[in-house]
Image (cartoon, rainbow, N blue to C red; front, side, top):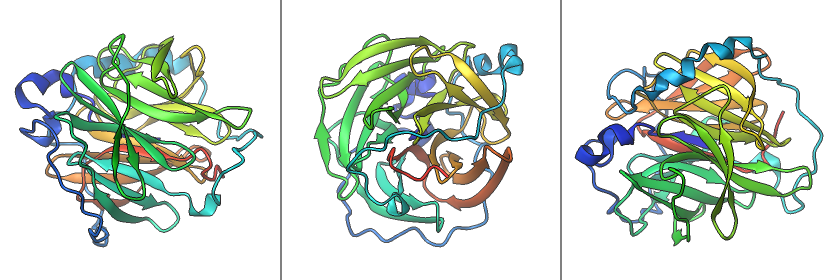
Length: 321
């Protein structure tokens, strides 16, 4: 439920939004009639050019990962929310570094532009999550400042929230997690320094701190599977760690090591239809979409886009197999 530029802390004071060049924030108009992206080119190498992260990626290489089991690809039986839309039409929603809101259909690999987000903020896009009703929650951040705005996935319209950063959670990855009773909760993971996990209580937006990742992980994004399993994608100097995480303790309970991405990548990811859909890229290059099958442990680049994707979100009603 999505990704992100994770190294803004390293250069934010001098550059604003690091991987996007010199940029103080969004001053963008709504473009509801923007055409869908052109047919994708051959997948590009999206993880090589612009440095977008800090040296904290080393924590993701912790040797303790080697002792953990692989991610369990088997799904559990859970109660779905009563007001789920047809899972077959549930899309993955994407947020780009220049403020575009897009949709991605994993069934057809089609990417379409919904509109350009024009929230009245000087902060820059960082990550996004989407609830089961199709409402997006986006993190904007620069330096020590951080905000959450609600975005309509139909029109890209912005609505403010009362979120106030605490405990270093101004820049974070985020994702909604379904629970056993058919509800869902918003989780975030701190991007700066050692990774940590917290729940955002809605509608108050107060933080419920869960703990530091154990073993340590950093530069992480979050998504969930519709059976109530939480996952973190964490960039390393070379490649990434896909971790299955206990949402109550932040303990890592399973790990798959991936080749995709690196500590300079803008990134996001979402789970849909039994696969993880991973977006990695850099400014001036665009993003590559990689399909990861957790049952086969197989990574497959499937398309590229000119947009630099920093956030991805998907409903907890999305298909899980």
